[in-house]
Amino acid sequence: MSSAINFAFLDEYAKREIRRSVLKAICIPGYQVPYSSREMPMGRGFGTGGLQLTLALIGEDDCLKVIDQGSDDSVNAVNLRKFVEMTCPGINTTTRLQEATLIQSRHRIPERPLLAHQILVLQVPYPDALVIVEPSEEKRKTMHGEADYSRLLVKLYEDIVKFKEITISHRYPTRINGHYIIDPSPIPRYDVPKLNQSESLTLLGAGREKKIYAVPPYCSAEPLAFNDVPFRIEDFTGANGERRTCMICSTSNSFLDEFIDEQGSRVYQCSDSDYCAQQQECVHG
Image (cartoon, rainbow, N blue to C red):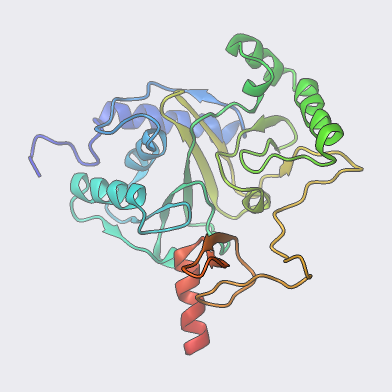
């Protein structure tokens, strides 16, 4: 690596600005803090917001884990991990959750609960949950400040009237600390309850939209719902009532991805590759 490249790529002024934004986001849970998103050597939409958070926070004593859709081996995860390794000489990386102090993820929260010494960074394409009902950012800011989410509730109600349930599969609107409603990134509904009272700090970065927000440790995170139509996670029960299991580790206690095998049959596999590998280790001793 050229000596002209700063440790963790970003210049020190950029790191300080991002850290100040992170502190403000932690102090006001769920509030979208604007920041000067830098140009990165990858297209916006490929995790530049999360990557800038990671590069601003990572230190020589940290151990980084990068996942995409739960997998450590996907193209996005591999390339981001290689970029951090290239710009942070000597930094440790891992695929094991328990070894990591900093976890950057796209579209998933790890299956196992995170601990107090760990920080989860989520990549976010669209940070504002109100964008589906109000195109004006100025008006959305006012609505957030007044905690006026009536139009968002009407949108969910229309969903119930039309489909008999709320059909949002990801980016589920979630109220943080009793006030701000956030877009929790494109994580599935299955992962939303993991944000509630988590021991770890969760940071969300949107590079294209230039926003950072946070769910601090031991903070309430409540999915938006109605008393008579409560929030529910994905159901992996088959038509005959049997619980679907991972074809590799046989667990039924994780978020499962669906595939079609060579025989044309539906099969299921753990989305979290590290969790799947550790379940196999437990089974085989």
